[in-house]
Picture 1 (cartoon, one colour):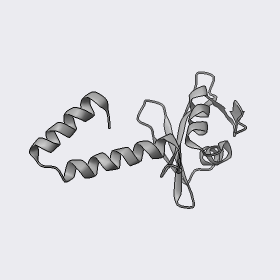
Picture 2 (tube, rainbow, N blue to C red):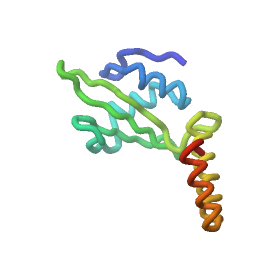
Picture 3 (cartoon, helix red, strand yellow):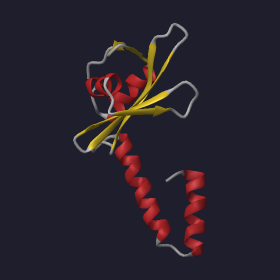
Picture 4 (cartoon, helix red, strand yellow):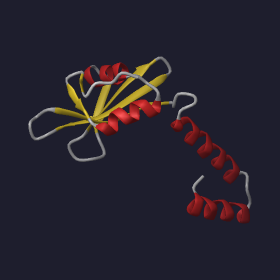
Length: 122
């Protein structure tokens, strides 16, 4: 995948570029989300903005903020639902399997699953 450090009027962090690669979508999709979002809202961290845009059935989210030089910095990005075969898709599948097992278990089963999750993850 060909990515650029400066793209769509923003500087892309190594983290954001790494996430693009891991999550299997293009910098063009993320750049379009950033430059012309369908909507935006304040991010969870102070000074960040969350930009969102739909591409078919998928929604791309980009987190960005301005630095001290007033340059836009893209911090992270993701696509929901995760694309098949990506690490995010595998994590989502494990989480859903855990939720199903947890809901269908009795008291001791829930206790065991909660402890197992706490110590070993999903």
